[in-house]
Image (cartoon, rainbow, N blue to C red; front, side):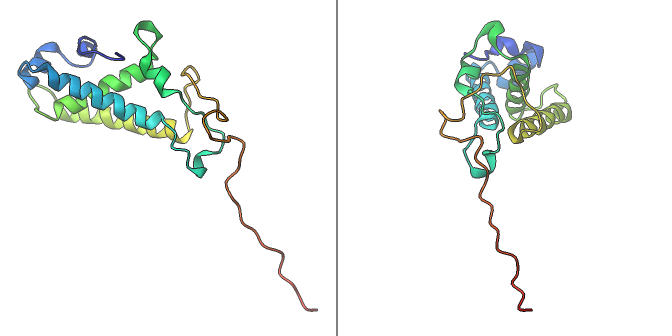
Length: 152
């Protein structure tokens, strides 16, 4: 699995997790699964014509199948932040909600930039655009007309 509950210790104290979830580890697993799916959704291209501008297509299957040191540390950290935020929504026991919300918002802004191509993570596995069904060098449809005719 890409992320497990033991690795959340770098983002939230264990006693806080226990207090929020009341010992129900399925809540932690649901938070992690939600976070992975959320981060994956930002990295997945939906092949709309506006995305056929040459931006990178990330291989999300390879990214989230990685384990141990093969995982991208930035994606892992962002996934942890999202997971903590989703778990904290249940209860705000001894956790500063505003701080968790601020970190979560920062991650989402970064993922938006990653999705639009403003920033790139070259170390992430990428898909070949032609194999993915997206022609990267294809420009969006542009309409034009002839110059105006003058009867002089």
